[in-house]
Amino acid sequence: MIIVRQAAWLSALVATALLLLVLSPLPQAARVEEAVGGAVSPIAAAIRGVVRPSADVLLHAGQMEQLASKNAELRRALARSEGDLSALREERTRVQAATTLIAAVGDRADQFITASVLARDPAPGRQLLLIDRGTRHGVRAGQPVLGPGATLVGIVAQADDRHARIRLITDRDSAASTIVQSSRTPAALAGTGSGLRLDFVSHGAAVAPGDVVLTSALGGLLPPGLLAGKVTSVHSAPQDLNETIVVEPLADLARLEEVLVMTGFTPGADLPLSSGTATKAGGGS
Image (cartoon, rainbow, N blue to C red; front, top):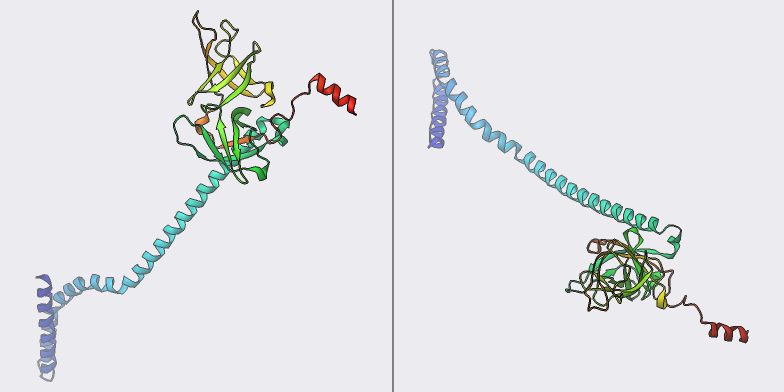
């Protein structure tokens, strides 16, 4: 309706202009033009006020399109920058974690390599990790794997050229020879699928909550003295031959992102020779 009215006013103005043009030769034309101009001027101003915004939009439509295009490009550049920043933060976190792990082993750092955790076995009770280091990096089955604080978190179960699978100490198939540090009580540290327990500890043995459990050299499968866990509870009944001892890992195994593989250790290679073997070796030299 408004548009129809504006068109009508515009038509009236055009008609008036034509009429003035026709009457311009007459002697009274100047007065008529002055009178008509005074009457039409407010109307023309109102029409200009209505038409101007539309004209401005049409004139600046190209600029608005350019601004929208630049805005979209800036948003894409910002998204790329945020992605790069996130990647840099992750890399810095990984490097800091690896540096902390190396610092924990002190002067034995040359016996270890750092590795990143790539995946975790989702099967219930199975505590396996996939890392980004393999045989080309010196990783071999049986090598111990350490986590924060140089604590034992697992053992290499399998390795190929570029990757290796780590069996965490809490896995159901995990077992290691250990001793209780305070009393030197030997025991087998076994995984339960969700935690740890000490097996083959005789009833009445000197083991108490808070005792630290270390790896033992018995069997030559692990180097001695690695931190393996801490006793949390000891239970027994008169009819039991062995204590029921619960142990907790000293590292948060569910949040491992960087680990140390002890590539400087070869399982069974450092077993001491028996006296008989030593005598034969001496006699043959």
